[in-house]
Image (cartoon, rainbow, N blue to C red):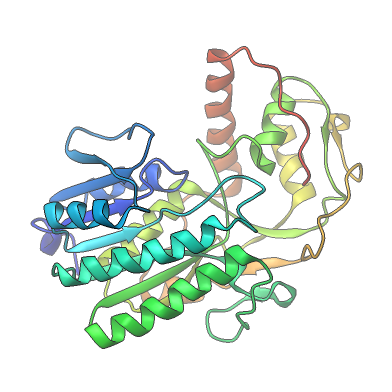
Length: 321
C-alpha cells in the first residue's frame, strides 16, 4: 500500500486521547482520506479534518453503531486499560480483550481490509535480554501481558480464516510529551525542573526507549503496509536508567546530586536487560527512528517546562525507577 492508494481510504483509530494515539493522529491525516478518532470521556485534540467520536468501546452496541456509521477500511486499535501502576493486574484487561475481539469481528463484517493492534514487550518472557519476534519465548508473567498475547493469538487465527490483513506491534518503552507524569522520565524531569531530589533505584537496568513521535510514525507505516504478523517497535538501542536520568539532568542543567540512585529497591521480577530487536521492522517495512535520545529528551523537557509554566502544582512524589 502507498499514500496514493489511501487517498480515498478511511481509518478508525481507537485510544485517540492516549499517550501514543494522540501522536498518531497527525501522521494518519497525512496518509488517509478520512480519519475517524475514537475516545471516551476525554476531548480529542486533532485537526478539523479528523472526525471525532465519543464512544465507550466496552459497550458492544455502541461499537456496532460506530462501525456501521464509519465503515472504515483500516483499523488502528490502540485503546486498552492503562491506569498507571494497576494495569498489570487489573481485571479490566479481560474486558478489553473481549471488547477488542468484538470490535475486530464487527470491523471485518463491515468490509474492513487492514488491521493493526497494539501489543507490548510484556508479552515476552522477561529474562531473555534482547527480544526477537520469533525466537524469544512468549511467556508473560502479568495479567496484562497475558491478555495482550491472547488478543494477538486469537485475532491472528481469526484474520487467517477471514483473509483479513493483520499486524500486531510489540511496543517497548516510549517517552515524550503527554506521557503519564508518574512514569520514570516525567518524574525525573519534573523533579529536576523544581530543583527537588529524585529518588531512583540503582539505575543499572538496561532499557529500550523510543520517542513517541517515532512510535506513531512506525504504527502509521505499519498500518499502510502489507506486512502481516508481529513486529517489535522500539529504538533497538540500549540505555541504562542511570544514563537516561543523567542525560535529563544534563539537559535541564541541574546538579547531579539531585538524582539519588540506589534509594529505592527494584521492582519484583524486574529484568536487568529488556531490549527490542528491531531488524524486522527496518527490513520489512523500511522504518527507522528519526529522533535520537538527546533530541527526543530535549523536546520532552521543553514540553514539560511549558506545562509547569501553566501549572503551579508542587513537584511529583518520587516514583520507583
